Every structure is written in C-alpha cells, then in structure tokens.
Length: 180
Image (cartoon, rainbow, N blue to C red; front, side, top):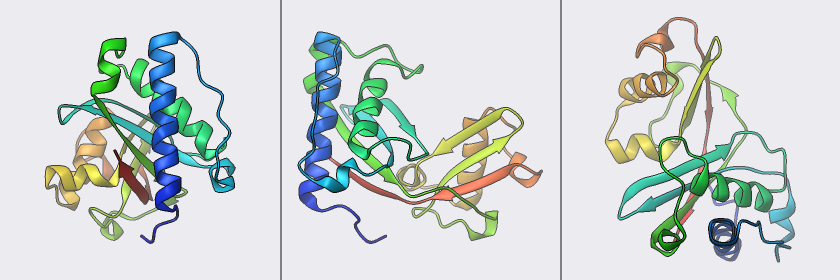
C-alpha cells in the first residue's frame, strides 16, 4: 500500500497520541490539539496499539471515519490506555514505558475468503450480534496463513473458528502502520 501520510504527519500523529494518553492518565483531561498538517483534520479511521516490553498493553480503534483523523487518534490513544477490557488502566508511572503504534485504516469493503491476502488485509467478521476485527499486521506477527487468520478473527468475535464458512459477513481493509 503506498504511503498516504508523510513522515512528518506520522510523527505528528504519534506525538498527538502520546500527549493524549499521558495527559488523560496523569491529569484526567484530553489536551487541545490543532494539527500542523491539514490532512490530519480530514475524517479518518484508525487504531492505536500500546505495547509494553514488546507485549500488547491496549488496542482500541474506529473502523469508520466519523471524526478528524487526529481526533480519532486522540480518542483511541486514551481508550487504549484506559478502557481496553483485557487490561487494567495504564498507571501514570507506566505512561513513559509504553510504545505507541498507529494503524490508519482504509474503508471496509466486503471480501470473499479466497481473496484475502495475509499481511495486506485486516479483517472484520460479523454474524448476528457478534463482530471481531484483526489488524493486518497481526497475521504476520503470528505467522498465520489465510485459514488461521480467518479462524482467529472468528474466535475474536466469539464465534466458532469455522463460522467464516457459514454465512458470516467478511470485510477487509488495509492499514498504514507506523510507530515509535
């Protein structure tokens, strides 16, 4: 995927995410931001992933571009630090030890299982009231093939691992991923 954002824009978004998480965890407030690049004020969908010593510490995002990208990143950074149900909220003393990664998402498009490209596509599965999402880099990090990726996104949604073969809706997206 060609780069949508410049290095300066990526660095600016990373700084915005870090400031948002730090201010919220330490002071209980979201800082006011006015991005330098006007492109960061355009609507954007994104996920913010926090890691600590190489392990996941929080990951929250929006799949739809409903707010300016910089604002989406702010909200997701705060949520990843304080609201991911898999982890306790980040303590003020931990803020400096986390690494921030941002995934800026393209719009969701319906996809057939045979068209999924591992390492390129992220997946969202939906069936009934359940849904699950995995970012494109997750499959690569774990060395999954297409079938494993499909099984794991089903598990993330709380569905049987082969539910992708039984009428679940599958959507793909790509992501521009960058981190500290």
